[in-house]
Length: 402
Ligand code: C5P
Image (tube, rainbow, N blue to C red; front, side):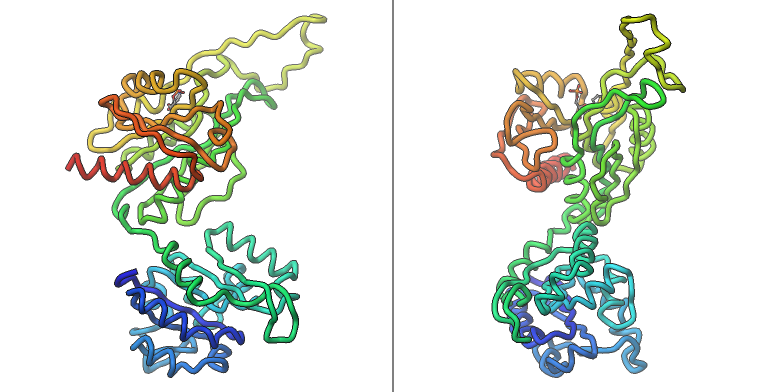
């Protein structure tokens, strides 16, 4: 965490007494720490203690004429590379979930573009209240990281979940939230999910792609400082934090969106399962079996879709273009041929017959295939980790080509 800028935002719970220890742990690990607090928090821990430990002034209210412009809420929000909200009270979590900003901490949380790590601490009944549960769900879906709370004896006399995690555990979680900023300046265009090829007003030809792999790549790219654009086929997955999402339906729509965004991109990753064929015609009305002779079948004529990956690769210039290949047999040979045919810089092959691999799984077992025929087999990993490894390889390729 050497020289990483961490803002510890303290809200008003008894667990605030552990914050000086958290601050010391972060500083010992090399971080530059500042603190902001609510007025209620300053009832539990003295701003003077935090000021002395961090070597920086500590504010506990939104407007201070003597310090405005230097450490106002926007400067603090912009300064931070990570905000650690500890303890995170039910009240502040609710404010953040709903976009309220009526004190220094909630204003900083709303204004910052840095990742947020929340360490909740509260009475067990407040923690289990449906309102708190719903607020946490919203916050997690927006990419807010959480640690704890832990179970045990609570300061209020109750037993149960509600104790703030220990400072060492929070510091370790902070370290893993602080991703390297190695993709800053890159514009990463990612396609994800399957496409739906219309047959008539209600039906389509589709496939079983969940979109999880592509969403994970876009999320990881944004986390590492890139501008990430996600062109997504129909999917109910939440948009990852910091990602610009463009929803599309058919392969033709995906091609339009990808082509339009490709100009500004420096890296393109085609993780989508694009339909190779579409019905040559799609009826505006619902096709009814009553309109066909009794017992008659229905024949659909399919025509090929454009190969988006091959098209983009042809005009890639300095860009790095990555393709995916879902294979069920002869994986490596098929992947090598595909890479050559499509002209991309790297191909990620996965065997969809394996359990921990492919569609709708949270893990993937992939092999990287390089233009010189070399391969690199990874273990079965969470898709988030596969995304990280893939972007590492892409950045290495870009480094080598400069
Ligand atoms: O040929 P195949 O569909 O196996 O190739 C898979 C790779 O090509 C994936 O990266 C996929 O996103 C891309 N693709 C494409 N346009 C298509 C078909 C596949 O960009 N029409």
